[in-house]
Length: 85
Length: 117
Image (cartoon, rainbow over all chains, first blue to last red; front, side, top):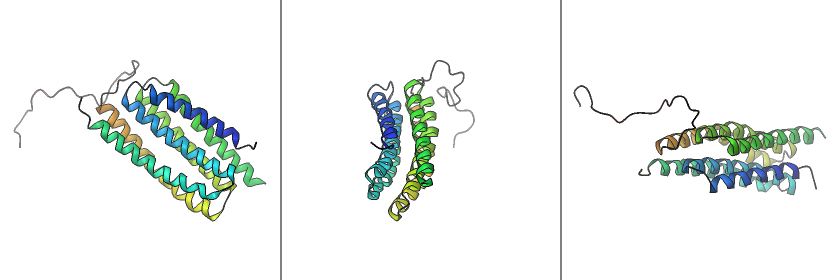
């Protein structure tokens, strides 16, 4: 038990909210917004996990998730925009 | 001693901001309001967390990987949220009932005045 566990548990709670919004979002745009926040939570949790495990190489996941989150958000919003009514 | 305190404080502030974004995701009535909550709180929150981790463990690997992540996060989040907001409006995501005015609303074009080129 170290102090890093407290923010990790808080981020897990936020991730539960994100998954709830992904499942029961009224519109599809709500699901895109929830996915964006989910990537943010994943990035923060991975960075804290590198402190918790004392392995600095885990930070490569932070960089990868940053790029992947941006590209995913852009791609899904283009798909949403081109969708026929 | 002091890097743990400063970095831990930054990580706690960032986590609190992300938690506020999660609360907004849970409570706000509208897609556009949720975009607002996620963009502001989550950008500043994740940058604070990454800065805190970088202060706690200033190894070459961590600094070399987290600095581009911070810069990319600050550069790409406005574009992403702009694209999501535009896609939300174009896919006619419903507005909250308390919305007064929709600046982007356009009625169907009836006719076009003047010569067309």
